[in-house]
Amino acid sequence: MSEKVLMKGNEAIAEAAIRAGCLHYFGYPITPQTELAAYMAKRMPKIEGGVFLQAESEIAAINMVYGVSATGKRVMTSSSSPGVSLKQEGISYIAGSDLPALIVNVQRGGPGLGGIQPSQSDYFQATKGGGHGDYHLIVLTPASVQEMADLTGLAFELADKYRMPAMLLADGTMGQMMEPVELPETKPELIDKPWALTGTGMKREHNIVNSLYLVPEQLEKTNLERYERYKLVEENEVRYESFMMDDADVCVVAFGIAARVSKNAVVEARKQGIKAGLIRPITVWPFPKKALAKAAETCKAFVSVELSMGQMIEDINLAIKCSKPVSLCNRVGGMIPSPEEVLESIKKAAGGNE
Amino acid sequence: MTTQILIAGFGGQGVLFAGKFLAYKGLLEDKQLSWLPSYGPEMRGGTANCSVIISDEPVGSPIVSKPDVLVVMNLPSLDKYENDVVPGGKIFVDSTLIERKVERTDVDVYYIPATQLAIDIGAPTLANMIMTGKVIKETGVVSYDGIEQTLTKIISARKANLKDINFKALETGYNA
Image (cartoon, rainbow over all chains, first blue to last red; front, side, top):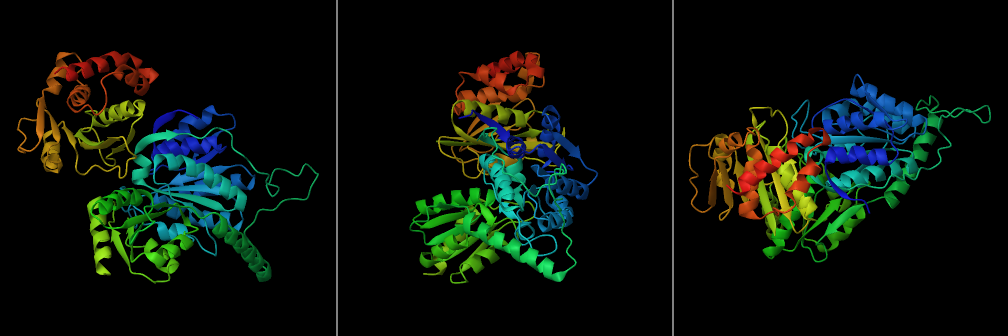
């Protein structure tokens, strides 16, 4: 077991990525994610084969990711909300070419240039596509610095396994805060990538990486095949944490920093005799639909705690087929709900249905 | 036990570093902890603060809105956060820079002329560590033993020459 160190969330992602065998980083600085790029700038040149490149723009960076990914190497980029919007075209191309890659979004308030304080208002963009066309990303939502590290490694694994881009959907708080973290060992398990463009050596047919299919029958086929893989992801890769849910009447649903605040509120609610619990999605795509549907069998009400105007709440309603009331407890623009605000929402949800 | 600490002052006074020191000390004592800085358009002369939570249990929200311990190194910070401190909490005031007294009567208040003491020991930029020494003494949130090892851990090799003076500042605060 390695020693625990104190690190910022942004730095933990960077170190974990390097340890996962990601030797190629392309990015462009933006608050509140810049420490990640800065860490890469410092470390990559000291690693054999390591590449750090500050691109001329976010668009350039994501296309560099596209290129390296086609060669089968682990590769990533990171940014914050406005920068991730710029990357959407490239992400769609990467998804359309069935390539793995890691995109990190340390979210800040929007829309537009917005602010620089934490937010979760890119949920729709992350989970519903973001760019054009039918596609998904595997979207992981860390709620601690330890998870910033652990989910980075997992994101690379899953992206390779299913040949699709993965996103780490964090927020400014997660990026900036320091917590003790135990970094993973440097033994990435890399799988074969027979599709990669590594040179034929005159011994095999050319591999082609492409997202252009002018024959509709062919394009339909690639889409259908891709969605078969997505089905596997939905079956096998759902992750969530369940906290005090055994006898819960009120189910709070929250991820990332909102889940941290909500946990405090749930503990306080229990002290006051309210049976509250928390389901914390760790993957928001695939979304833990079954866990929520199961909770809906016994819970009276749900509370979605979000740093957005109410985005995940739609997935909650879909998962439980609107069978129970779902209320929203939210702050936006860089504000974070306090445990007291969440507790108030829990109380309302508990009382409103009796 | 969980102690929620808020350290606030001007950018450049080392409030983030003071928090980092406490966090590292907690880490070396195998405690659970979180450190969260204010970030953004802060700069030297602007306001800066950091939230530090040190606990025997896993830390929930890393945001400190009702501190048990408030450390203030300028007047705007005292004005802003005085009323947030929990009843029975502790407020540490750099009395060289803050002339007014704390108005609350339901908290323990410690006035430390930290900036003056820092000048006296020849380390005018280390009022933050003097305040930290006093916090350790009066709260026991982390132990005073082993503060040298913590400094070794936290101060980069490039700045190793600053270790002794940081130690001296902590000691001065502890005995103030």
